[in-house]
Length: 212
Image 1 (cartoon, rainbow, N blue to C red):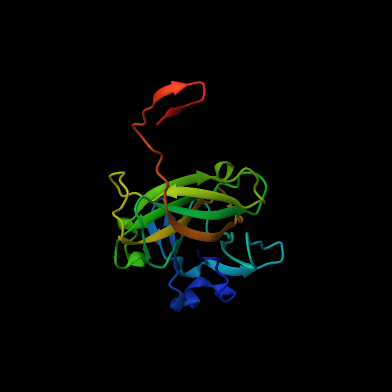
Image 2 (image 1 turned 90 degrees about the horizontal axis):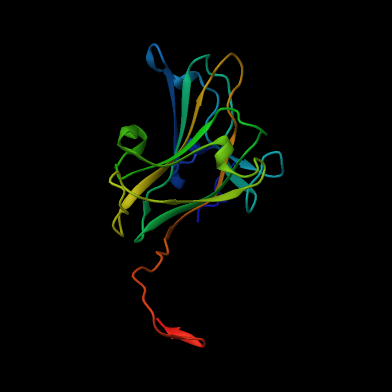
């Protein structure tokens, strides 16, 4: 389980030994990709107490908001360290936002087997997506999300596959000023999904029981 407790407070990219990385991608509808170097914000490790929360412990990772140009679209990518998936792999994590109401953010999870995920975002397959209304029942309470880790064909990866996960916040700025909502993530884990049994049958049913 990645609880981010071993990280130092500050930018994720400043801690390469821990394996997590982040990239910003900025788009202008008329001119395509823009240079995001002027953006001030990036995924970072933060400490409690509130208003900067964590689910368990004292730290979480989050992406705050900023102004990035009317009409532009911003993608904030957070890449996990390489993980080895079990059979029927599932991603679990806890998440919440910061502001009441829908601020226009879209939250996505991707997966790739690429050896260099930060420069190969086109190889990622989307495995989950939520808007702010769908992400949690209450904006200020952490909620667990459970996502099947499947390939582009919709099948589970074979056990032992090594891959990277990416958490992506997408926001399009409708006017001037700061837009979107901060996204908090904590307690990230990859586990084996418990598959429900199928083709069950019974016999010798009576008032005391049955043979399955």
